[in-house]
Length: 283
Ligand SMILES: Nc1ncnc2c1ncn2[C@@H]1O[C@H](COP(=O)(O)OP(=O)(O)OP(=O)(O)O)[C@@H](O)[C@H]1O
Ligand SMILES: O=P(O)(O)OC[C@H]1O[C@H](OP(=O)(O)OP(=O)(O)O)[C@H](O)[C@@H]1O
Ligand SMILES: [Mg+2]
Image (spheres, rainbow, N blue to C red):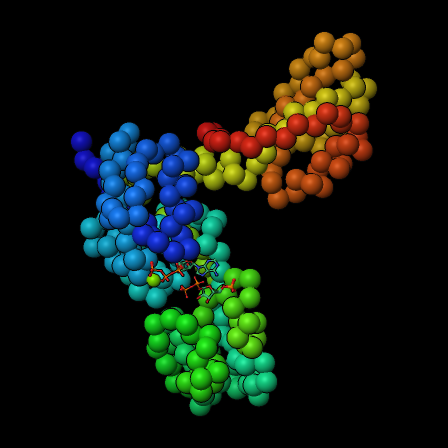
């Protein structure tokens, strides 16, 4: 039987979440910091631990069948790969920023200026599209200090909380792209049976993460009002309680509007609400 290879980041922002996702998919492997390749004992898969910059090309060239990497790195390396699944972590935006006291206030103000970045390919495409003539200074890190050192007039770098910009006296003013971690494969790999199995496992974990399992008690007289507020994978389960006139309702609720739903349920007569995390949802 063939063994797949998946490339994930060795260390850095995406490492921990990538390892956690694969472990939650029921894959059993050692995660020693020193090993660059780790076999999975209960699935025909090997995990390659790489610098994230190398992942898109390894996947494009078929050295790895799959990879987990930020969209920003895929765009920058300009490879041709298949996007198999968005993974919902590593969310950030590539933004152009200037110093707080800069006289550059809009995109056209960048004409004739210099911009430091570790993303020259993406930035160059963006500037071309916006018809801006600016000099791109490619550096390999700590981009945020370059305006302060007089190395550039502006920067183009990843932003999430905005804390790094702020602490370096910078303010963002243009969004170049938004990004999150994605599962990629070589073109056509989505038709491979083993890869499909892995994608299904990943999707069941992501679905579970977005939802909570809820059990609540309600008097029969208030049941319909509570049911009207609830979705469920198919529909909620209603079970009789030992106490006459009461039922227990079991259902799943999306994480995103969790708190507003819970207060609506309480108002509708729900009591003893128990909320549990879900491991997987297989449809
Ligand atoms: N502040 C952030 N918040 C959320 N996600 C981020 C943030 N910064 C970067 N990312 C995402 O995480 C990815 C990895 O970031 P990291 O800083 O670990 O990269 P790196 O230093 O290039 O790592 P490597 O050593 O593997 O080359 C980025 O390419 C981006 O997709
Ligand atoms: O908006 P914030 O939440 O402050 O995040 C932004 C910072 O995060 C990234 O760097 P990272 O911390 O991953 O370090 P690196 O430069 O070593 O990759 C990015 O390059 C920014 O510097
Ligand atoms: Mg990198």
